Amino acid sequence: MGYSNAGGVGNGFREEQVCTAKAEALASGQVSELTVIHQNADAAGQLQQIRDLIAKDVDAIVFNPNDPAALNQALEEAKAAGIITVSVDAYVTNPDTYNLYNNQVEYAYLGAKWLFEQMGGTGNVYYMRGFAGHPADSDRHIGFQRALGEYPNITVLPTIDGVHTGWDPATTTQLISDWLSSGQYDNTQGIWTSGMDSQVVDAIKSAGKEFVPIVGADLGAFVTQLLDPTGFPGLEGAAVTNTAAVGGAGVNLALKLLNGEAVQTDPSASQPNTVLLVPVVAENVTDAGKTLLASWQSVPGLDPNWPLGLQIGGWTTYTPEQAITCKGPND
Image 1 (tube, rainbow, N blue to C red):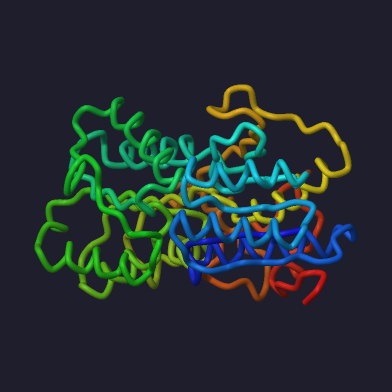
Image 2 (cartoon, rainbow, N blue to C red; image 1 turned 120 degrees about the horizontal axis):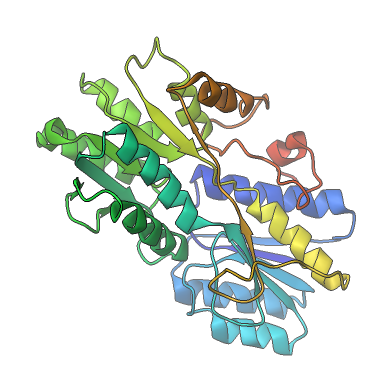
């Protein structure tokens, strides 16, 4: 089997995603070799990655796409070679490829709706997006705009299209630091982040500013901050699940398809052959929310930059320890 991840190398979400793919390949007992190409590249570079995996005569290719349509030529070549293809974390438009990803429209909608409610339905929101052009970022923008349509007294800063962090910690830190030093943070009532969240919290604390409500993802560092009122007094926030275990689930889906098993897909998805995972919101302003957040912190040794959801019921078979070890069948 082959695995292509062409972006976000060093990002906790992408690193966990690759490790869960390795863990599932190993735990399944059905994969003799998993060839992983884990290198930053543009769409043309990922097109070549997929072709390189085709040349290795793999039975299936699982990949996180840089672009919804730019990889289609290589995916058609894979089909012609009898290779199963599975896109994870975002969809592609190739009709023969299966898609398995978190419902990114709902991810953004649920988090934004919580944030706007927490702000009392009025005020300025600093809108910190992900990687420009990535299907997940585009879907999240749709969900954010949908929530915005329900709250006419919310203003989005610096523009309606927000800023792109590239899902990069250093870029995120620079953006929020510039926002703080410019004085614009003082007129900000909420911050929506696309998963680059703990860096935002740390920068605000370092600047000696009071916190505004912040939405992020279920990343270990952010959840720890949300549950630490002593270290981060006044911090109110919500984490939305965006499990990186789609890597492992994608391997599992590929194996199901290779074994001729029937796969239930979501008819409401924008593309055929799509499995959508439903996100959950947990906040630190109610006892129930705090309890849910705390329940996610149960795996010792987990990298604080990794999302906390290491497994997906019905879609992964490895243990959390196997994911953290990050070993595949040929490692």
